Image (cartoon, rainbow, N blue to C red; front, side):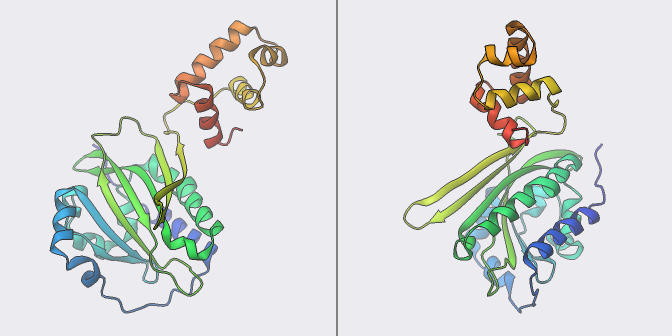
Length: 265
């Protein structure tokens, strides 16, 4: 049966990313988060019946300042546990392979995108990504939707508000997807970017397959690629079938998109 693993190093790395990128003042403010998020009976009812969880992480205090009671249903934990133990305890329940991708690729991509946008737009950005979380001895697929509504004068994020739902019923693979949206009053929620990170168990491409993908991305034809790599057209067709299977895609454009997300082209 899977067990929790220590995640203090992962959390320290994530928090150091935040400090390095933004150099925040981390001045503590006296804010009654429970009053802001917990006094709406209707909101609490909706969150509870939707199997959803609302978390508020205050970067100025480096801890969770609000955890909705529905955490018991979603993560199998009482709210007090997370409030007392902190973010590193929550991370310890994430599948180790997913946690590595979150720390090394997803959060750096989020922070990079965040910094590249105008300060006035940052509070309108919404970040959606998924991972596997351990609950009652088995892993569930979780979707986290985060925004950063509170900033300091330099528009450095001071708070992460996360809305978390269980998507196990709808998730059939272990890939982690990252979608970044922007809310506009006139346009509504607009998708700015969507990418995915291959699951750890997916096979990586061979050197020959990587060369084929690179040449395909350059617009080379099958005959040109076969000539450059000194292979027969029949062998090239076999390689393409194998690559489609590994990437779980059906078209050339999807294959190139997959390779791009892996940094191969």
